[in-house]
Image 1 (cartoon, rainbow, N blue to C red):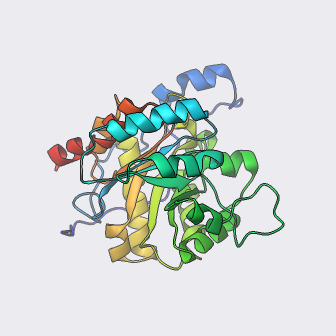
Image 2 (cartoon, rainbow, N blue to C red):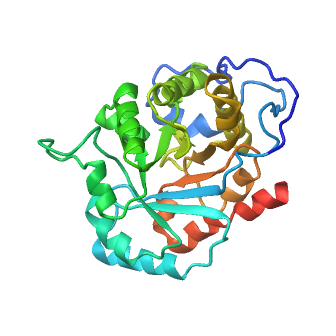
Length: 307
């Protein structure tokens, strides 16, 4: 991957560009969020790290979350098995734990299977947890860690998530490492600070970055129907790549795939994919619809056009 020599200003976080609201949960606040969240800077994004996105393959993951029944998942797997997918994309789906074995045994080898969570060590007296060893036994190749729903609903902190990632990687699972800011954190100009803190918790403990995909998911865009503009997403992705260059290595910054998640669907994926530092997607609700998920996978063609 050819490196670009241009300089870029130091990132210090996105400044607040919309008014301060005292009731962050109010209905009017949510209704106006999409129109008021704008990039704080008028400068065009500079490309100080790589001319195009990470040097690895385009990566699309489908997070099925706590959805599905045997019947609906059988239909979804059938749709995925018959879908025509671009060859130069790594594709992963993440069913609920109870359906992992069912999906692993019936899904085409073209698509790999991921878990949605894992424990910090070997199995044992940990009621309700799933060990990495058990995940591998069902055919899992990946695990999603640090998702905002685990952070903000379950209460997992950065250090706990980092320990999970370290153990999973040491045991041979790939990690989809999620980062992202809350709405009030973006409003307060703390987007980069939050993302960098979450990144550091991974960087401090992981043995290698060879099998890590970073998923930037602004919490305010997950399941809300609101999606970051391509420019908003690109600026954060660029900042993440710049952080990796400065704090890990230039090689890791170039090789690590940084994917976007947050209300990605078949209609908006093409424009998002054109951004130089968006290397794929982590898809929620739209991944439950086989044809639409295939459209998102195939948005790699927009990346080729943009290149």
